[in-house]
Image 1: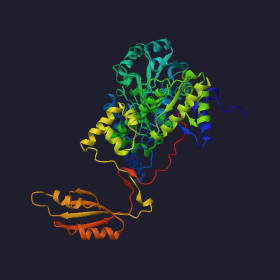
Image 2: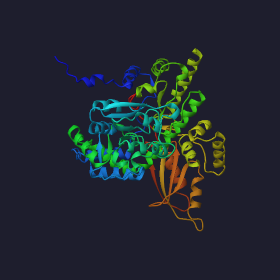
Image 3: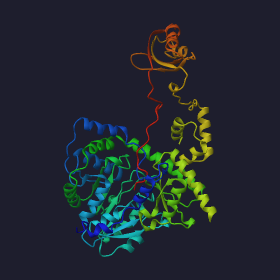
Image 4: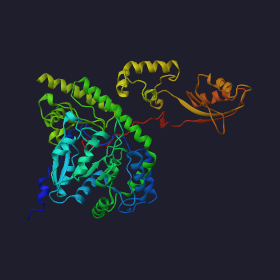
Amino acid sequence: MRDPLCDKIKTVEPSGIRKFFDVVSEMPDAISLGVGEPDFDTPWRVRQEGIQSLEKGRTFYTSNAGLKELKKEICKYLKRRMNLYYKYEEEVFVTVGGSEAIDLAFRTMLNPGDEVLIPQPSYVSYEPCAFMAGGTPVIIELKAEDEFKLTREELLAAITPKTKILVLPFPNNPTGAVMKKEELAELVDVIIENDIFVVSDEIYSELTYGEPHVSIGSFPGMKERTIVINGFSKSYAMTGWRLGYAAGPANIIGQMLKLHQYAIMCAPTTSQYAAVVALQECDEEVEQMREAYNQRRRYLLHAFQEMKLECFEPFGAFYIFPSIQEFKMTSDEFATRFLEEEKVAVVPGTAFGKCGEGFLRISYAYSLEDLKVAVDRLGRFVEKLRKER
Amino acid sequence: MREMLLKFIEKNSKIDLQELAVLLGVDETVVANEIAVMEKEHIICGYHTMIDWDKTSEEKVSALIEVRVAPQQGQGFDKMAERIYNYPEVNSVYLISGAYDLMVTIEGKSLKEVATFVTHKLAALEGVLSTATNFILKKYKDHGTLMECEPQKERMLVTP
């Protein structure tokens, strides 16, 4: 039989997280700080709306772009929270999670050989999706001393005549880094002068603990070259509902929608009805979850200071990214031993790019009780490693 | 900060002061002082424990009693409330808008004990016009807390 696979897919590496997941699954008594999703349940009023939509028999496709009512609410929300102005008729559509929107953006905009600038450490899907879409991923290695923000100099150094897209993954998974308004402003003229488009993954935009999130799309001259990707997973604790959206100029959004229509048809109907209620009624729940994350963030930072684990203060998402360089081990070795000896799962920084070496992603999407147990074990493990040396 | 602090100890009055300070991002002495002040001002009125008595061998019966009263000259409902809340059997007394005036919750060892209290003490009070006794059959949620443990979450252990 001839090879059923295309050449490209064989060169795509499986996610580094997958490997860890397989190991942890075999350890029934392991605890974890390794998840990338909220520990909260979806707010009850949202779940109730989902149930009701089923009871009413709303079990058909919606239009390809999504329910009109939902698109309108999304536009209202983007205006209210992000200072972004989009027309619901042609500048926004509903996707199966932010992930689908990322994939569609690349497939819609890239010609073979176009370069995609991907700052790392960052979410695992940008690089393979850009590659499968025919682009050439160009990694920008962010630095701990910059608190893993993208600087103007780094951006300038990475641009070539082939650069077409810059991915902006802030607030960042796995580092928790955010980019403030003045830090984004440093990038804007470089982006415009070099005629680059931005895919801005703002899925964690509601989870910032200093200043509110600022979207790159809100800068003058940026709306026409930015695809804003957001969704319901993190802010409304709706990961399993698989619902996100993309907003941007009509000429790009219209083409992404075409692909969405052929590949997906429409996002889940039940989820769409529920999401309308999330946007209309759940500001308070979002605020409460944000405050709870912030308290845990403070708790972990304090605990890391006590155990003298080097760590910058992250102001976004629900991750802390401590350095383990003092132990002269790779992230993978550290995470493997920590799992074997203390039965706690954390994700090695390298799962999010080579420059994540020497760091761990620790999630605080856990109850304080769970965090306390894990922190005790981490403290014990760190002491043990220091004695070994 | 005061409201945030109250929200915390309303849910968990056992929380360690040092931990509370870390979570709120302030100094431990600030938290201790604030709590002391609020105790003095009677904003914090007491510290209680949520107990599901149904799971113990202790026999307990609770009832919600709707009470209609005649307001007393010059003292409105306050005097009537006082006459009722002074009984140790009475757990709470609320002035209510609607079809009746006071909602009284009481606890006793048996239906009979509660019924006796209502007929002999409560209904017999001067100014009490009528009572309606509702026995509590099962508590699902109290003070924002579920009485049954929530089932284990089925979240995967490691996700991107």
